[in-house]
Length: 114
Length: 112
Image 1 (cartoon, rainbow over the protein chains, first blue to last red):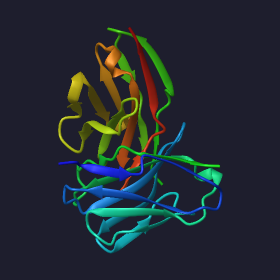
Image 2: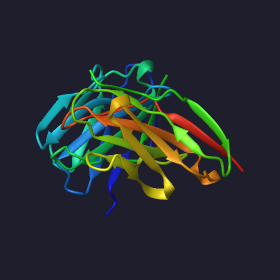
Image 3: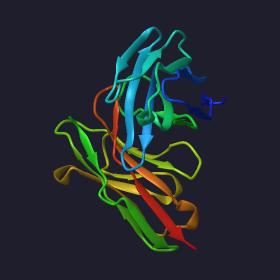
C-alpha cells in the first residue's frame, strides 16, 4: 500500500495564479483532511471531508476550496494565490468513529507564492 | 475552542540524556491525546496515543507519555535519547469526533 500520497511535492506560484493539490489514499478511509504547517504554528486544519461528496471548513479555510468527488481523492484548490499561502501542505486520512483513531499523513507539498 | 500548548519550542540534548517535552491542553471533556513525530524531510508519524485506561502510554522507539487529568497535561518522555531522535514533535488533542487540534511543535536536536 502506498498510504497517503500528494502531488506535487514542490510548487512555485506567482501571486494571483491558481493551482490544485491532489491527495490520494489507498486505505479506504472515510475521512480526509488538509492542513497547512507554518513555523511556530504547528498544523492548522484548512478543510476536511467525512465522506465522498461532503466537505467542511476547518480552522483556516479562507482562500481555499476543496472537492471530494471520489472516496480516495481529496483536492485542495487555490483560486488566486497570495504570498500568505506560502506554506507546507499536508493531507491526512483516517477511519471514521473518532475514538482513538489516528490520522495518517502524506509527505507534504511545499508551496511558495511569490 | 480547544487549544494545545507546547511551551518548549526548541530543545537541545546530548545523546543518552533524558527527555521530557511538555504538552498542555484546554478541554474539559473526554479527551483523546496523541504525539506525532516529524523526522527531517518526512511526513508526520504517530508515536503514541491515549484514549482511555492506563494513563501511562508506551509508544514506538522507547517513548512514553503520561496523561495527568488534573493538570491537563500529556508530557512525552524518553529515558535516553539518540541522535536519530532529532525531529519535530507535535502534541494533538481530539477536539471533536472528526478533528485534531495540534500544538505548535517542539524541535528536538540531539547532539552526538
